[in-house]
Image (cartoon, rainbow, N blue to C red; front, top):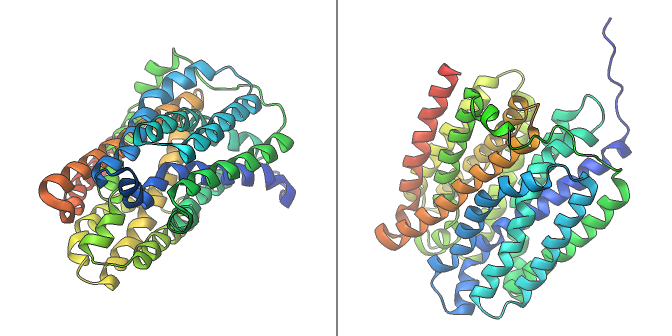
Length: 388
């Protein structure tokens, strides 16, 4: 008879849960400007689309720096590396909170970018290492829950803090929370030498794997479509749907709650229905984006689109992370750095296209443009499934 993996104790999950809290913090700060675009723009006397550069340039810099920074840090002991990442992250948020003008705010975000680029390359493999034996998939699910909670609590709380105390307070609070999480992780994590990180020679090997490159292309397409609309969801809710400030906050909250549901659906359905879990989130995202403008006619119909949209994107992110790790057991950190870079190419490109659409065709059409791009991603997911 096969040996059964013993059920881990609750305390065995504490380091993984702390990593999930760290994921919550890093995801919150990446997208916090989305919930504060109007306030930041008003404070500095700039347009909302120019304030959107906080999202665009952030994402493009992560895309540019993820792989080079990970190659530089590949052989560093992971506990020390994580500490350094957090120190840069905290210092950058203090500078954000004190920024006297928009260029200084942009500069502070460069420091956050450097921390983000390394953090997302090492965190999923790190979670697999510190999780109880035989429970790696559950560990990745816990990380994804941290990411979803950033949408549920991070963005709405950041918005509430910003409305109450000013947008600067949001960044200072994020930096303070990161400092607490860093202290807890350093206390609990053991020494973790670099392992299976990969190196420069790993790049051509990884890029010759058709299934992996197919996932990378799918990532770029769907994330671009998603963020073409999502970057400007706050002004869309306020100006196109004529919603109140409270309605915008509630919609962001429900979007994030739907993300948690998406994680649960993945955890229960991926092993039994892997093909459906691969195709359905992409197709559902495309459909929701195309319906965004018609749904703006009423609050109920808009929520009816945003909830499945949030659920689909959370499930897609988890599917993607799971499959990239599976496809690169020999160079996981480098493969994840490439994945993070490509994901952020999609974020930056989407934010840029959303701004161009808002300034050109008009803010109401961001969902239409986003839906066309996501539709192309849906077609590509079918091609990948048949070919690879």
